[in-house]
Length: 131
Image (tube, rainbow, N blue to C red; front, top):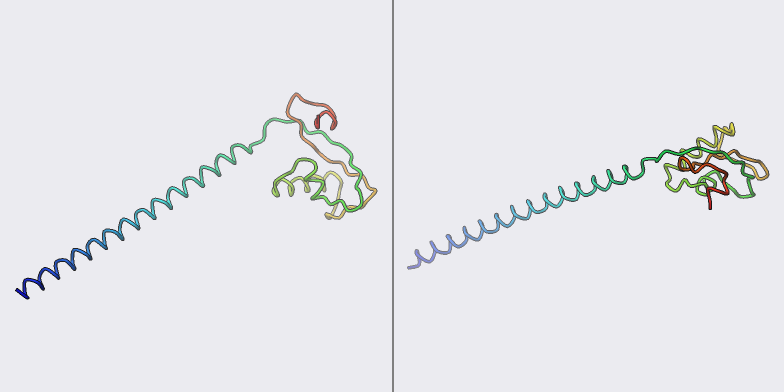
């Protein structure tokens, strides 16, 4: 009888271990599935964002801006539509090239030539673009 009980205890112990192992395998599979789904979602968002940010056809116009005391190229880039940091950096490079600037430092009282884009066919001046 004691031997029978021992045998049952061992069988129950093995069943418990198997159950635990199956639970662990399920947990690992679920974790892998979640990682895959998260990666898929993240890549989809990236692709959609990249697709959405592709430029529409536009005309580039130029305007002259008086540099006020305390202005920076970064702030001027924001003011003229470069909202993302990558866009601002590219905008600043354009402004530096257009104005033959060797550095980012600008001085109050100077004028800068600033590019701005208008959707094709809209044309016009800076005032028309803002309205």
